[in-house]
Length: 339
Image (cartoon, rainbow, N blue to C red):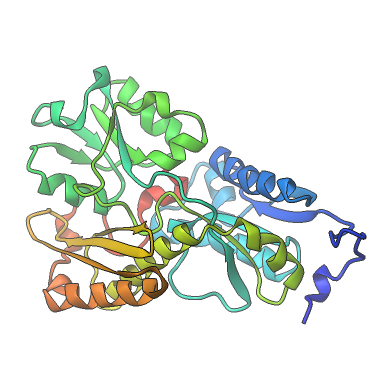
């Protein structure tokens, strides 16, 4: 059944006579990502207008009292989903790694556009690479996943908590407060700041967050018109990869509070998935790999997570041991700023 909120008159081309309303947060990265999706739709012949949705989290940040952690990410995602269900917008764009793994009633993940490079990167003083940082170098990250994997490398780095947007984080390096910060490559690529990257981290040494680098385009499940408009934007290989990664996360969330990294990649009709769960200090880890047909992406992820739990992944968590304030498998602090 066609959603009555979207049942407008149609032109002879089948396009709606009014623009598709794309909901976005007002941050630079959010609007940049939303414009990427809007441009893809316009290339298909659709009219699109951006509608800024201001959440309670945005108001708190503007007042100088930003909320942090998984609650912040949840507030931002929830505001866009609330606007969707209220019919204020027709679609919303998120960083896919921000989305909870549980389904949202009445809302469908309609498209996963082609994924950006999911790796993490270093922005360091003096153009240094990770292995060139001296022992004791202060490296900022708000992510328990990144911190645990960096500790596991045994480089003797002083890992310290960092919050704020890209400007403020990189600014801490420029000011000399930190020797380096770790960020997601995808976010910097989208806002044209890759020239500040001094090292791209090996994805098998520092596995990304599930869904990192991918965008999620959501709409109402009953809105057949918008579902049809978004279908051509879906990139099957990217969707399969993030489906497997999120399946790992969803299953581990049920029995494991340790920092988690995972990366799935397609090779023709085969999907290969790597995943790791670590103790916050990086001293202990459970790492597994799995492969199978792309069509079985979700099942591959679930089976991989089950193997990790059987190997002791649930016994790794000890949030009190993480001085960066990590909370295990909950959304990473840096997701608030998508970098």
